[in-house]
Image 1 (tube, protein in one colour):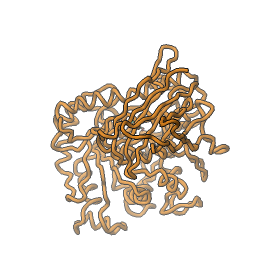
Image 2 (image 1 turned 120 degrees about the horizontal axis):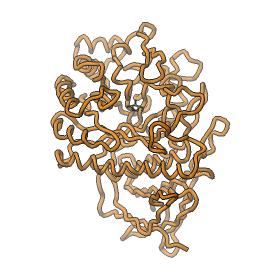
Image 3 (image 1 turned 45 degrees about the vertical axis):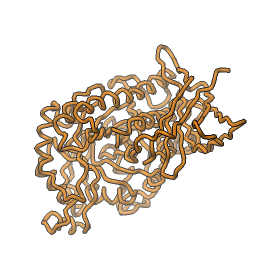
Image 4 (image 1 turned 90 degrees about the vertical axis):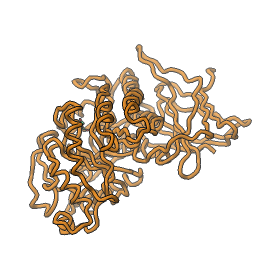
Length: 495
Ligand code: AHR
């Protein structure tokens, strides 16, 4: 038999705190990401609180969502916040030009969004409109949300039902300025950013962390230029990277029914996040060696061909065991870069791209990605622990090759050491020996997420087809060894 993979966790050299915001979500006005999936309005027969679905909110609370980004995405650069306040039946109806050309009722606006995040116990990440907006519009939005004064705008907020200021944890100036946000160069964006940020004057206790909208994929020029030019005026630079099975936007690959070639290519493509983090961090290190700025991956996840028969502008896709592995592999990468990567948002929370939850009218199901997020909850605000992986094999197919086991460890806020392991091989389990030098490992206890098929997924007919199961092992003769099933994610407390 092959020698087991060995995982040795070094508890004597704790690393940075894994910011809970690494587990952030993204909810855009896109398809049924908000309308239908989350918001049904207070008069709906679907049980809701202040218009937000009780079933979906309950499930999101159970996975400890720390942060929600809103209202876009591309949508943010055409969103005018004043359209979304005051009596809902008087709000202007607009066309959502980015996403399917459908009518946007503006029923969900600033107050509704804060109702949602406050119900979730999450923080708010508001994305400002640089594309079709102005410094004045953004500065007035900040004043409306955060001023405790008796200014006309603060009083308008009170008249609309909110006395105390809202807490805006993060505020971004624009989105994808290189594309849907205005097709700019990083230098041009940096000038615009500096100008706008000057006027975003939130009072100190309510000042959000300011985000400059950065680059994507292999382009590190945005991280380079923005960290050099905006150092004194930003708290971080965003970065987007989507995992596409084929690597080509024209034909991306299907969410289900894929061959093993697309299993490995998807996982290989998602693992490229490691290089992206390294390259963008290195670019930022040149101008910000003290790491004051965060690298915020505020869009990531899988992007497949839309499901047949659905509106192409709604970006609706099924979510399988493969997506759960994608999520876990990215978490492991983000943990390893926790000194720089302090916030991320998976795209997107409900019904859009790599969603946590899929709804159909009054029904709801949890996806395998939901379960991966929920299993990793102990890592929120945990302290990173370095580990050494030895004897790790490669899983290879048709010229593609990726490491079989991916692992991450941390000491959680409950004082326990947690270990997460991903077996990328869909055909073979892997034996893994777990040790903590200087300490006797007695047992591991936690859960495993796996299934028989690579594209196993939950449906309304079988909503529990993919869900975590208990997983534990005890040391024998002072040695602890576990078998990690093929195509699985395991999270355990090490005792
Ligand atoms: O998440 C969907 C879209 O992808 C976002 O609106 C945009 O920022 C990105 O291109």
